Length: 423
Image 1 (cartoon, rainbow, N blue to C red):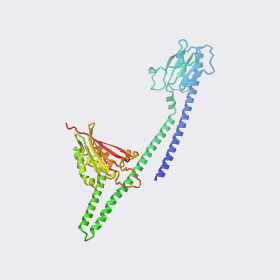
Image 2: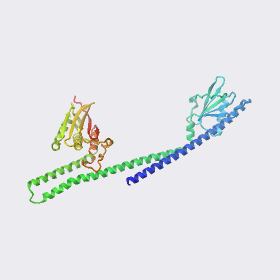
Image 3: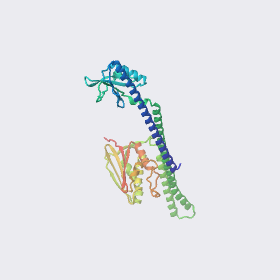
């Protein structure tokens, strides 16, 4: 699938799912409002009947307002009686009328006492299995101004009750959310796989190019060597070229094989003197240092440079960092290598004054196959595996790697390992 087709598919799918989610939200909201309105109508109807029955129960003439029932809030109702009320009779009437209208929501009621000028808590009526009227928290019913001799009914779990009446809507909404979540995850996996595929394609292309160049040089040199009557000096020269290119191929193969190794495999950990490892490494770099006029500044300040590490992998890790510092520096580069112990951790810093790494790419430089984009310019060779190997092996040996860089001002890589106590 081409990038353009994938983008069109992704945008269309996202718009479709957003539209579906908005439609579902709209209809769910409409259904909730309808259920809330139905609940309000049934409660109001039941309370009107309770009001009339209380007046009949008192058997005294009473003048009621046109609308005795008032909805004070979404789950609190008041009913004016204009007469004293028997709490026991009121409770029975409320239960009977709510049952007739299939209102099975838990509710509390209170009666306004005109003599004490306050609401007297009545009780909690339970309909659900998890409700216990003995453990009810007495609701503080607010006084309603302008009313006297009234009772209030409060539904503490009204919203939950309404949602329970919308089970099918709730299930369908959750189902759509799950579909959106799974689709989003699928898109993430698709883009991740596409990115990995592109990285691997770039890696294979780069690998082919890196192998093709030395092989071509070797083939040309062998053609020259195969010709008879060649001067000894020329033969030695081409033999040196073949050896140099063969070593270059070996180094490239070693890089790929090192990265292919599982960092969690059993390492051959031993006590190593980091300063000795660094000096041995610089000896290997000596011909290159002289040829490219590289300046090395050594600041080995760690008082006890001993750590537990794998000798081969530690050497390869430092080799990769030093090789990068040289490759990404300008002519006659200055490379600083320093060690020190900070907070019982031995740190190794390799700092250069090269081209640096742009800020937008710094978070991905330790990813496998990743290389900082340079357009069509390929003046620095590599597979995008060196820093991935550095991070994987450093962490496998119990260390940490950090980096700071500024474009056109150089980079500094720091390895930190648990320092050994020599006491």
